[in-house]
Length: 523
Ligand code: SF4
Image (cartoon, rainbow, N blue to C red):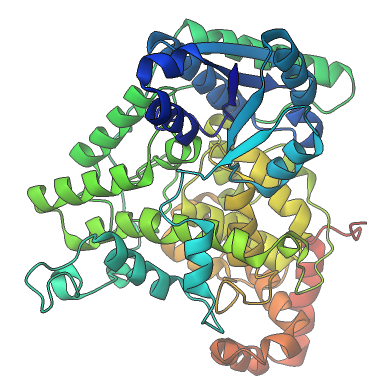
C-alpha cells in the first residue's frame, strides 16, 4: 500500500502526489492502492504557542479537507496525536505502508523534522504546488544579481505568467497593461474622517469547527494549569473560511465588494475598521485552499471586465504575484542561517504586553493588538508600520520578535515571517531584502491612522512624559545606529535632520526613549 502524508498547509485537491498517482494508475486504481494521512499534532505547541484562531483554522480546515477527500473516494485517515513521528510510525505499521509520498514543505524546519524521523520505508518528495516560482526557478532568476529587488522580480513574474500585460504592445505581451508596472504611489492615501470599508464575508462555525474550538480551549486550560502560559488570543467568535468552497466565496466577495476600492486606502489604519478593503485571502493561499495562479487569473479577468481602477487591480495582484512569491523565494535563496541575522545587534526582550496582546498604553499598538487578539489578523501596514516599526526602533530581539509574529498571525509561517520580519520589518538582514530600514516616527502613524486621536501621548512631542514613544524611539534609533546608517545613501536626509537637533534636546529625547525600551537585554 502506498501512503501520502498531507501536511496542514497542503490542503489542495491538486496535491502533486495525488495527481501523480491518478496519472500513473487512473482515478479508480489510485484510490484503491493508496491511503492518505493527516495528523493534528499538539507537539507544535511545545515549539510555538500559537494563537487560538490559527489552531482552529488549521485543524478545522484539515478535518474538512479530509472529509472532502473521503467524499471523492480516497481512503483517508486522520490522527489526533502528541507527536507526528509516533502517529506516522503507528499508521505505517497498521496499514502496511511500503512507501510514503510527501509534498515538499514550504518551511525548512518541517522538512528537516521529517528527515530526522528516519522512517523505515522510502520517502518520495513531490515538488510544491503552493507557489508559482519553484525554488530552482527563483535561484536561476536571482543568481546574476548583486542586489535583489522585488520590483524587478515582480516585472519578470508579470512577463513570465502573462499577467496584466498589454496584448497590443510590440511584441505583444512585452509591456505592462496601462503603460505602467506599478501604481503604488497612488495607493497611499491618508484616511479621511469617517472612512469605513465594506464588511468582510464571515462564516458561522459548523459542528466540525465547533469541536475544534472546544479542543483548543481545553488545550489552553491544560497548558495554563501546567504553567505553560496557555494559548494567546481568543478562539471565538471564529468567522474564517475553513473549506475551499468558502475560500472561493471570500475571493468572489472581495471582487464584488472590495476590489475596486482596494488601492487608495491600502495603507490607511482606522480604529474600528480592521479590514477596510483588504482581500483577506492570505490564510487560504497559505493553507493551499486557494492556489496563487487561479486567484491571480480570476482577479485579472474580473478586474478587467469590471473596469476596476488599474491602481487597485495591479496593487492586489502585486501582493500575490510579487510579494508573496518574492518572500518565499528569498526564504529559500538566503539559506538556513538567514533567521539568525541581527544587523543592529538588537537585544531587548519582548515587552509582556506583546504576549498579552494589549496593555502597552499606546493607542496605536493597543488597537492593533486588540484586533489581533480577536481574529489573528491585522493588515500589512499595521504589521509593518506599527508592530514591526516599534520592534525596529525599540531594538527588540529580532529572533524573538519573528517567532512572536509567526505564532500570532493566522497566515504566519516560517517562510512568510522570516523575510517579512527579519528582512522587511526589522532590517536585521542589513539590507539583503529592503533598501532601507522602515523606521518611522509617530508622525507617520498620525498621518496614516486615526489612532493618535485617542492616545494619551502627544504625536507632536518628542521628549517628556507626554511625548509619543514612537517619536522618541525613532530619533534614539537613528542616534544609536548613526554610524551604520550613514553608509546607506537612502538614510542621508533623515540623518541630516538628526544632526540639526540641539544636543540638550537629543539628550532629553534619548532619555524619554530609554523609558519606553524594555530594559533587560535578552539572553
Ligand atoms: Fe501611537 Fe504615538 Fe499616535 Fe499614541 S501618539 S497612537 S503612541 S503614534
